[in-house]
Length: 303
Image (cartoon, rainbow, N blue to C red; front, side, top):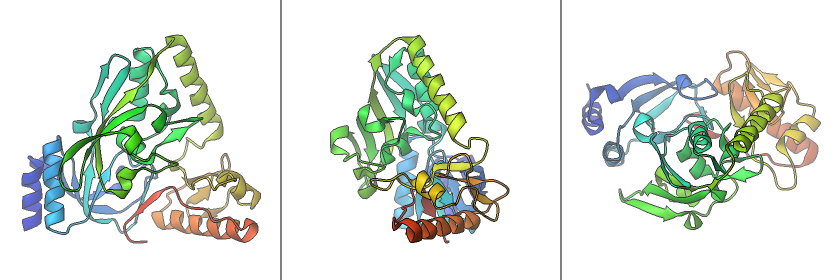
C-alpha cells in the first residue's frame, strides 16, 4: 500500500471509505467514465476536511462528487481523489417553513420532504437528478424556478479549511454559476426558505412537471441533462434541431430525437463518443447560425 493511500485511509477514518480503481461509470448519470485512482466517501465534515488537506499537501487532484448528473469523466479515468458527498451529507431537517439539508441530499428527496410538510416553492427541483450541493454551486433551475429563489444561505468549507455560513445574496448566483465555483469552496449544507401551501396543489404541480419531463425529455436513456447552456437570445435545443442534427450520432452517443438539447448514451457509448458528438454539434451549429454553444456539462480527466 502506498504512503499516500495509507494517509488517505487514516484521514477517512475507516478503510471501507476508500477504494482504488473505482469505475466512474457507476457514479455518473451518463454511465460512462474510467476508474478513479482513489474514491473516498467521508462520513462527516472532519473527514472531508482531512482528506482535502492531505490532497493539497501532496498536490493530489481531487473532485467533489454529488450525484454525477452534470459530469462527463474521461474513459481514461481520473488520476486523483474522487470525493463522494454521500450518506454522511444527506440529512434533511425542517425548521418551520425552512428546510436545512446536507450537500449530498438528493433534490427529489428534499422535494418529497417539502410535500410532506405542505411547503411550496421547491416543486421545480423535484425532477432534477442532482444533489443540493451541486444545485447550489450551479444555481440549478427548471420550469421557471431556480435555487436563488429559495436559498437563504449555504454552509461552505473554504480553501483555507474554514467553515463559513454565507448568505445567498453574497453567493453571486447567476445562470448556472455562483461565487462558490470561483472561490473553490465546497458546499456542506444549505438552508431553504419555502412557504406553507396546500398539499394537494403541491402534489399536483409536482406530478404535472414530472409528466412534462417524461413527455419532453429522454428519461429512458442515460444522459447528463441539458448538454449546452442556453445562448443569449436562443435555445440550444432548437438551434441543434434546426441544424438538422436530431438523431445525429457518434458511436453509441446520440442527439436525442425527443429533445435535441440532450445528448444521450443510446447504446454503450464511451465518454469519447459523447465529447466528439458534442464537438461536431458545436461546429455544425456555429457554421450554420454563427452561434457558439457552450457546454453546461463539466468535463473531468484527459480527453
